[in-house]
Image (tube, rainbow over all chains, first blue to last red; front, side, top):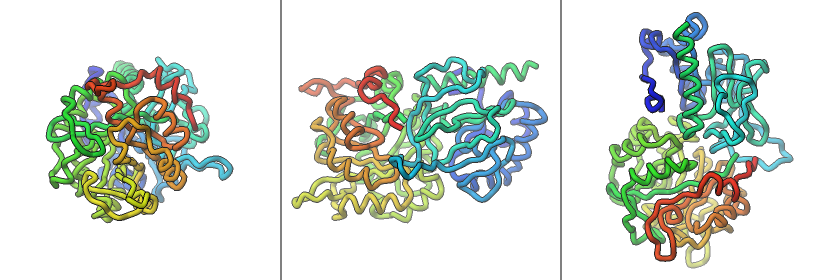
Length: 194
Length: 256
């Protein structure tokens, strides 16, 4: 998708290569503890933190990659990287309502909750593809970026400075995902020209 | 969440086929071309099932899958002949996010349990084929519908859910390719006892059928093969998918 948008992309865990990038995407599939373990094993937790907070590079966490940036998750026992004023919780439905299937798997409409360049081009029918059993719980409303709804309204994305996290999969969301990636690439361009 | 409407593409060697009641595979074209069309129509998801891999105990053709994933920015599920963690890992690396497991669910449940642990439950889809026995009981079949497990469907689905799969793709063998409507009774029965998303498959002939599977059958998604590759009573081959507008009008309300 990035190549489709004219950007160069490379999969790497090499510090030098990460440092030379104008933006970094942190993907993630699997369980929370496994993710934490892998990040620490390769020293990526520290590297990414330096790149995000000292070098101010734009970072985009996707799904588990974003959850790992929060303080903790109900899925695991290990602490997350803890950059973001949020925790990760399991979907929990009221006993009185019909229990929705978990994981939340499929397309849901979203709403930008902040005036932000990441939400440029959103309309009433903007939707993304989600696959998750856990979601962010934001503890500081200032970082709320995009909301969605599954049983109840939940934060689908956050932005804290140059660090962005999305629960959905832009790479699997047709033109909606393409639009979001375009917004992220624009942010990367701006930051690398400062 | 919006109910998903999912084309199921059957692969055989390198062609795209469509069966009727799991028999008489008819060639309908080139899979890459079909993927391109479905991508343009912004389908919710695509499921590929290799209908010969399990029977022939063949490994999946990675090149064919890679050709297809390069074409689309949407969720993809692949099934057929998967029986080792290495098989699954190869598929996922190609950019497929879900794998469907059918025959191995019956013969190697421990392997599926390991796959859930390794790749996460939401990556593993249980694909279950069933038909009614002589006594009217829903019975599970494997190996492309050729072998009875003698297991009753509802009990089997519960056992499979306990393994930790993230989704169940339920396929009625008797309705496959018939356009006679989904097996709403069975969908209703199964969705009541299932805690993960249920994907209905087998029998779709109209958008109204799809609406019924979701509203009455309480399926999270409706999948179909013939409905998306044939048109008219002479079953002319034409890859088709309802417009986003049409889907919104029929089933588009966010039901959660």
